[in-house]
Amino acid sequence: MKKKGRFFLLVLALAMVAAVFAGCKDGGENPADTTPVVDAEALKGYKLTIAGTDKVFPKKDESGNYLNALQEQFADELDALTERLGIEIEQVALPEGDVIESLISAGMGALKYADLIHAGQDQFWSVAKAGALIPLDDERLTSRGLNYTDSTRWYQTNLKWTELFGHPWGLTVASEYVPAQTGYFITFNKELCASAGYDDMYQLVRDKKWNWDAYREIARATTKDLDADGVPDIWGTGATAWGNEAISNGVQYIGEVDGKWRLTISSDAGIEALQFLYDMNYADGTRWDVSSGQCREAFANGTITFNWAQMGHINGPGETIYESAHDYGIIPMPLGPRATEYLSMSNGVDAFVIQNSNQDLDKVVPIINEWALVVNDPESYLKILDDGRCRTEADKEMMITYIIPNYAINRGNMNEEIWSLIDDDGNNGGIISEVSYNGMTPAQAIEAYEARVNAALDKFFDQ
Image (tube, rainbow, N blue to C red; front, side, top):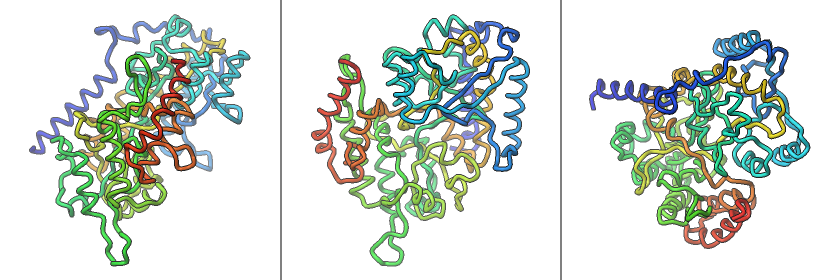
């Protein structure tokens, strides 16, 4: 494809993503038109409290100065908001100890820890089950003006993944100030890929020829022992996606089957996905078996071909991969034989939840409606890709077209018990750990864990 054609496709992709983010609900109704007018006088003096994250607060250095002009701009916007409404916004800490137990106990005792609590779905789904959270579609929120489907205020790509028990539970945001959470993708060493005969990985993606076979071929070809000491000096694979690679065959670890939640990685597509994990991580001998941190350092130094990463791993100066000495590239996960589209999965989604014990909703809802217009911006979010994390326009194209909008979460991360059986129980057990790192075949792993996973699902869902 000629460069002009590629540029046109990139522009088209940008327009499509912006349209998705900024789209109106119900056939064209503007969500902003349905949001009640803010009565600043009624909100005056209120302190909005946020717990569980510092990502929605401007970042400062050790001297107390803002890290850069963007963070100072973020602070100015928040200051303008608090001055206009006559309010404060404060970061607070949750009690020490288990977050799930604390929030469930708070719900029983009508105790509010914060107006917005940032948590992972493996935490807030358990709290929601106990009745200690307010679902986003509850009348207590919607009647006060919360419209969780308003894409101008809430980041819809991730928000939809907070749904369980028939309701959405968490609010998510993304802007040039607050990077959206992504699933895994691959950063690759262009020179090493070219040495294996693949000098245009981006076109491979566009042609949908970027698949498991191509990945394994390149990883094998670039794993080399340069000094003949019996140990490779260059490795095909570094840090992995810790089992999230399975989504590349269009399959989840667990899902609903005939009205019940069941282990689904035991399906034919699932067995194929586990076989890919087994081959890539264990059988092929192309993965450097050290910590993820060491792998990222090696990738940055040019001795690893493929490094699986999330947005946080390239999130600006100071991040190891961002500081790579070579001109790395970005591409999505490779396609499995049953997949039709590239996907990007992570262990879970982080979101803001609201306690059932919150008695200040008359103030909280209108304030967060205004706050969201600062921390969520479907257009400015894409500006973050211009900070150097994407070395080329092709890398931006990969992010915008194949990675950011195709976010998914690993549904195996339902709660601690289920996740320990799917992932790792701390003693080298769990389906992902056994197959990827202990040499257990997919069939052996399914036989060892299927009944236990299904029993844990029955317990969690009371089914």
